[in-house]
Length: 235
Image 1: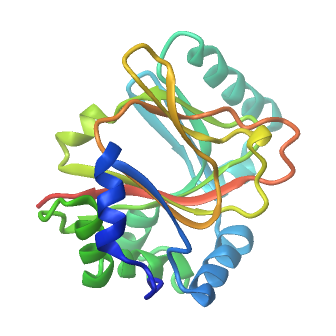
Image 2: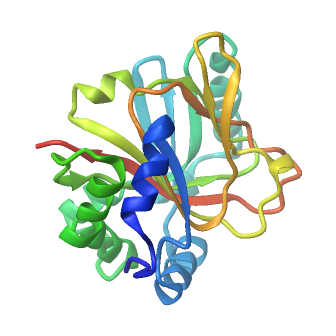
């Protein structure tokens, strides 16, 4: 699955400058193309958002049955809450829980989850990040369509769940920065210190906690931001 030409030692030296890094051409081309097809054509997308501390997951079949007016209220409610607090809204597929429950047999995402958790991928991430205790990863497929966002946060609660390194396996082609959905990092004064633009076949890694956000996806974005996201974890 991994591109054999990558040099994890050299990548690790770059990573430790800011404890984050964007790695292009992470997968061999055939794997990247197959994953792109799965995300753009085969994944049953639901939607996930939060109401304060409660995470609300609307699965694909529920989303299809949702009346238009109720869907509009869902979006407007998330936007209103984003004015004053932490908020997110985007399409998702819960890879880990679906795999564990045996849902959607044959979906290519299940194979991807297995290989992200296989030793070659884990060993690569351990070497790049310099964190030798990473033993597993969770995962969800994500699609930021126009109007979707993830406001500023630092993932501090996730540290208590043994989540040490956040990742974004980006599979988005021909993305212009004006479309939004940028992974941005911030300093203590809320100034932007780094920006990762969505790319095709690119892995973003960063040690948590770090203040970051996914910016609002513009209404004129012609496509969505496709990715697999999650955390690499300690035992």
